[in-house]
Picture (spheres, rainbow, N blue to C red):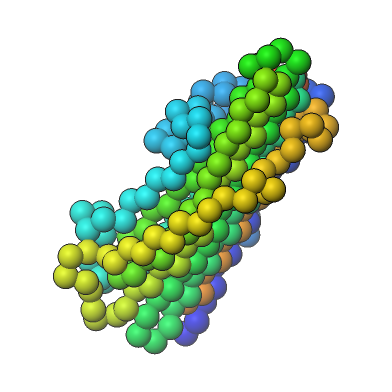
Length: 246
């Protein structure tokens, strides 16, 4: 028997006005806002309290896939990927894109995904523009994990920009497990500054994020969570995650 779980969520905010919305999907295609988040930027950042941009001005990545966090092989493969981006200035933009896919086949399970978060800001006051972006990955139940991570940030008198990107592939082989926990292979790449968002092209205050999760197999789960917030002439914020479980 083969089943499929799907989840999608997206947020987009453009000024004038203040917006705060959360979308959550659990794979049953009956989506709706959760509400109750208020309009406090610190509460929004605490959605992922151990990985938000204000504490990491140069961007960053967080990974949890050591043997102490890995479940027994019978527990299956679980992968969560996401991130956050924040920009502060008279003009600001924060964007996020997340996709996460997983599939179970005879003898093995595989999950793969990508998270890209960007922020840019402009201020007429020297030093008044701030931008930060970060990504994270949590994997359990995998035997092999391949990662590629890229991040960069720039700060000028009136402009700031940041970008963080994380790609991964995780593989779980049935009936076998590495003796010392999952085998992790990192493939860092040099950053191409042409990929940084352009602060001089900002249309005001803008926040947008989208997340997609999809899992194939019996007893699978896919879920997404996104959050977008912007305040006119002040800042833009996005954060979110996508989870798959086999």
